Length: 191
Image 1 (spheres, rainbow, N blue to C red):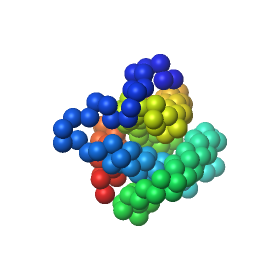
Image 2: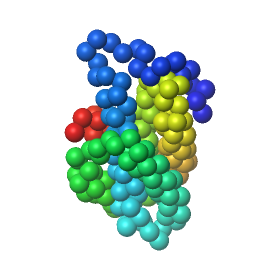
Image 3: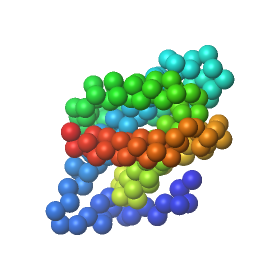
């Protein structure tokens, strides 16, 4: 899965430009935002399952939710080991994630899957950028991100196979949710 990623740099942040945050700050941002993202994904799937818990799609959603819970556990561990503060926006992501999941699920299984496609597209791009930034001195974190990215790509592909692209208003919904996800990423890195 990392054949589409550039090879790891010798040292993290080697391509930093003047004025860019320092390496330690960037690594903390990476850990903070990935922890927040996995927490948000967990809440999205909880919202979807609250609505679709007995539907044919529930088993697929539960499988993706279990993978997100494992990612969250991994990022929670590294967040605590490195003493990185979590995002202050976690209470907002608690509510917004659940609302997004439940709201799209109320529109039907295909809309719930369209939500997954949009979020996972944004996360795929985000994780690819992070993996490219991290060097061999951050191999453990880079490997964790690459492994999580592989699961996120699989979630996106599974959602497409489940009919996401046939959801009513698929393209506007995908664009809006993907833009919102990118905004959440930007905010969680900083706040």
